[in-house]
Amino acid sequence: MGLDIRAIDDSDLYDWTLALRTGFLREPAVQDEEIEFRRAKIDLSRTQGAFDSGTGRCVATYRSFTQEITAVGGAAVTANAIANVTTSPTHRRRGLLTRMIGNDLRAAKERGDLLATLIAAEYPIYGRFGFGPATWVSDWTVEVSRTGLDPRYSGPADGGSTELVDCPTVAALGPELYERVRAVQHGAIDRDKFWWQQLTSRTPGYPWTEPFCVVHRSPEGSVDGLLVYTVQYAWEAGQPQNTATVQDLITATPAAERALWHYLLSVDWIARVETGHRAPDATLPELLPDARAARIAAYTDFLWLRPLDVPRLLEARSYPIEGSLVLGVHDPAGLTEGRYLLETGPDGASCVPTTESPDLYLDAGELGSLWLGDASAVRLTALGRIAEERSGAAARADLLLRTPRRPWCPDTF
Ligand SMILES: CC(=O)SCCNC(=O)CCNC(=O)[C@H](O)C(C)(C)COP(=O)(O)OP(=O)(O)OC[C@H]1O[C@@H](n2cnc3c(N)ncnc32)[C@H](O)[C@@H]1OP(=O)(O)O
Image (cartoon, rainbow, N blue to C red; front, top):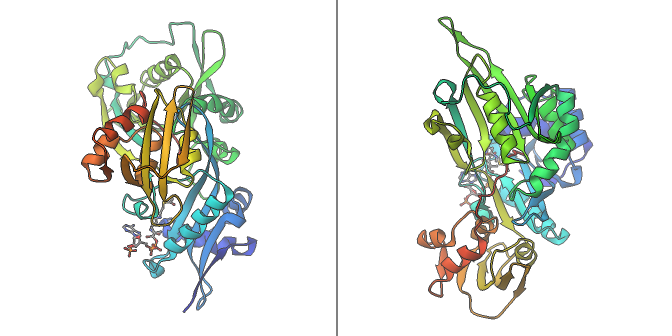
């Protein structure tokens, strides 16, 4: 029985969505409103389905779209973002994902995208396709009664302000604020109108509860922070045991972040706060007089990157110091295989193919892990994933590539 992989058309949307829901273990029922939402959102020409010629049924799904990711130094780099990857349990491990991702990565390379991005559902899936983990997230649970924050708090003392607003106000103010935030946060990705729609209104096919929303303004009156949270309402033996769950918290200044955490950790009746995905080096715990009131609920790899054009990718980011490095990149898919000479300085970098002998040999996935400055070349060498051909080269790579604050991608896609 044949398995035909092709770009889907509008008439496939119902079957494709059913296969997607099946693969993600969501109720296998598709409402017309969900189809309408997907029809508006997805680019059919970059949406693949695998169809079983015996039954005609869609048995695997895959989608990519153009995304911007912030490089170290603030440049917005064009990426091929991958999402909605599933193979139905009846057709697993027959190479369907391998065929779909191969098609897509070759097309992205031809289009000129510098890299591919995805959020890996499970760690072992994507390394074989040249991806490496590049950003991490930390999720915290805060016991409000233990924070040690002043219980008499009633708003920022520095002239800034917090205001409760509704969802349409978030949808109106959020995009401009987020543009400022992502421009200085390496690892952040752009948010399209559907992202804001899903945060601020009920979207067919996704669970949603009307949230509480707070805007923070600086002492000068500009919007510099946004907090969106829902509350799970619970009382036990006459005591409030409500849990607030952060749906989004973005800030353009450290003062705004401190003010919004202080706000949320002072709401009467909230006993516990679940922070959702924060930066891996979140300042939250140490904002609290008792930092141990915040416990790590999860600390995990998040955004994975796959280089597609090594010279342009390495030239797109900034470097703190002058230096040079020859990288020997191994890429079984043949997309980035080669030797590259990287020369860096505070004013820019050049990266060109070279015949010089490499300082470091590494797979494309390891380069994906290094690009945003999070992974350490010294550490990857200790793990046996980078071969150091010149003594001290891994430490030199870390001096060139690593960043003072860690990269962070706050969003799932
Ligand atoms: C970006 C995203 O959308 S992330 C979401 C990914 N989707 C899911 O996790 C949903 C549930 N899982 C699935 O639908 C499927 O298992 C998929 C999509 C992950 C894999 O699809 P398949 O068509 O079975 O993959 P395929 O047959 O091409 O496997 C290729 C190789 O990867 C391996 N592999 C695939 N999935 C996994 C996994 N979850 N864990 C470990 N190895 C895996 C296979 O064993 C195979 O290895 P081999 O070449 O050594 O034999």
